[in-house]
Length: 424
Image 1: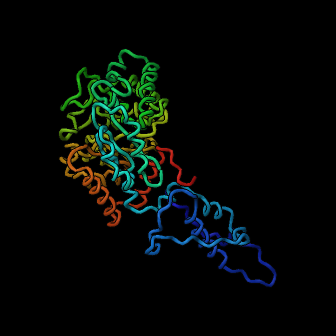
Image 2: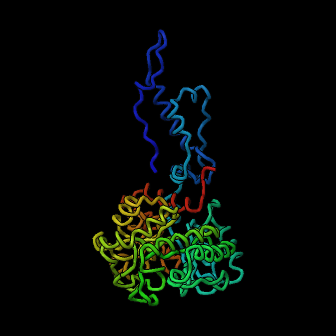
């Protein structure tokens, strides 16, 4: 979000001329300067030292504004000068802290404290990996969240879809494959059963689920290297997937968990699994008829977050969708009007490296394309990888390859999905 511009209002707002006094332009320039000063002091949320504050790191508070001067400001200028939004507050954050907000750090669910240093540095989220959660996961995550700077919250996410893709069924209860739900359960039953699991997830301090899968794929097979969907899809029917996807999403929300609808613009019928190599979706002309309607239905039902796939979409360019401004900014944001959080699928996927990107360069490209949060897999040195991603983002801003306003906007979406208000 950009700050309002101040138009030349000399003729529109000039005060009535007093007898014996010549008009002056000094009042208007002083008002403009005052507006900037007021904007710098808006709100009472978390604040970092101004970028150009003194070496001590202490910023000097603006001088008090005399009431007679405040009353002389044009009304619309006064409102603009005193307005506070998350983005106006984020404009005072360092580039590094903004970059950290856009990163989801992978961590074993059996050892969440491993991400303490990254959370302390301002990571926007953690991504839990594993197949069996410890009974005290909730208390461990509560301890981890205590390290969040400024107490602005933390996204704790995992893949709890059902069937063979469940990280903590031992703790929160099990769900069947989506294909089973789509065949044997009504939408009301899907919502009810998912809500029960979600409530237990929330009780364990997990507040985001990378689900539901709303890809339209009726192949009766387990997901594999050659087929990313199979039983992960509710159905081969677009209308069934649209209805059941919304039911699953609403079940998560009813249980207090943020759903992430995936994998835009639809993996049904893909040529390969992008985790293992380059993959293509069905042609864009086909996806518009078959794959996009479930995402449209989810957006209309208030989807808070959407994950973008790493597949190339024939007809939308040659980059994976997660790195494509056409897929994200033009189609998802523009044509479909999605206003929420956009997250990438894992940038550790072989499809990303095959397209010529390292994880850090892919993160920059994803943000440039309109994504708000990037993810990568557990493995190797997570701390080093996180640092490399953050450095790549801050260097891209410093070098003019990534607009700072885009980085602020991305961090703003991360805060918004957690319902964080920096001005309160």
